[in-house]
Image 1 (cartoon, helix red, strand yellow):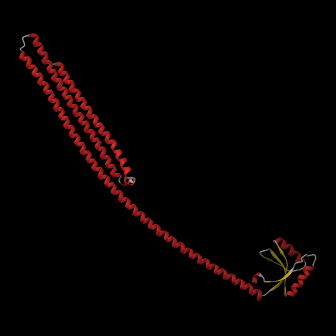
Image 2 (image 1 turned 45 degrees about the vertical axis):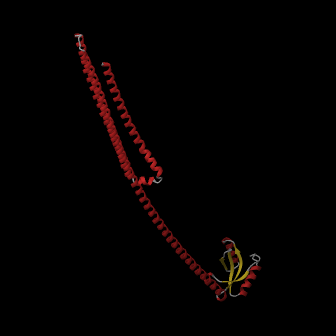
Image 3 (image 1 turned 120 degrees about the horizontal axis):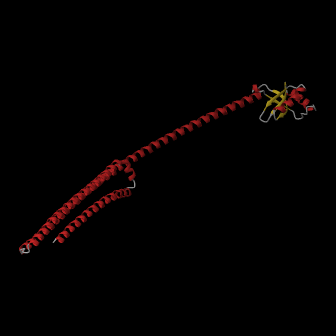
Length: 333
C-alpha cells in the first residue's frame, strides 16, 4: 500500500510539471509569434503599398500608437502567462503538500497498525477489509481531486485562449482602422501634392510666358534702337558726304603738290626737312595708308604745277613722282 501511494504522488508531481512546462512553452511561442508577426505585417504592408513611404511619413503618430498597443498587448500576455504559471505552480505545490501530508498520515496509520499487529496476532478480518476500503476511498478521492484540478486547468486554459483571441481580434480591428486612416491620409496628401504641383506648373507656365513676352518686347525695343541708330548714322554719313562734296565743288580749294607718302612719322619728318631746307612750305596730313607730305598751298593750279616741275627737276631732292591735288584743310571740311 505504501508503494502504491508513493507511485500516485509521483504521478501527480510528474503530470503537474509537464502541464506547467507546456503552459510556459506555449506562452513563449505566443510571444515569439507576436514578435515575428509584427515585422512580417509591416513588410507585407510595404510590399502591397509601394508608396507607403509617404503614408508612413504622414501617419508616424498612428504607427507609434499601433506599435505601443502591440507592445502593451505582448507585455500583458507575458504577465498573464506568468500569473497563470505562478497559479499552477502554487496549485501543484499545494497538491504536493496535500499528497505528502496524506502520505505521512497513511504512513503513521500503517506504522500504528503494524505496532498493533505485533502486539496482538488476533486482528479480526473485518479490520483488514475496512482498511482496504479506506485505501480505495483515498485513491478515489485523489483521482477525483486530480480530475477536478485538470478540469480547472482546462477551463482556465480555454478562458485564456478566448481572452487572447478577443485581444487579437481587437488588435486586428485597431490595425485595420489605423490602415484605413493611413490610406485616407495618404490619398489626401497625394491630392494635395497633385494640386500644389498643378498650381506650380501653372505659375511656371505663366512666368515663362511673361518672360517670353518681356524678352520679345526687349528684342523689339533693341531692334528699334538699332534701326534708329543706323538711320541716324546713315543720315550723318550722308550729311558728311554732302558737305564734303559741297566743299569740293563750291568751297575754298587749295592747290597742293604731293611729293611723298611716308610709312611713319620719322620718314615724313626726314622728307619734310629736305623740302624745308630748300625753302618750301611743307604740310603733313595723316591718311589711312600713311602720312601725306605736301608742298603749298598755291593760289591756282598753274602755280602748283610750276612748283611740281621745280621739285621733280631738283636732283638733290630725288622726288620724281610729285603731282598736283586740290586739297581742303580738315578745319574747313
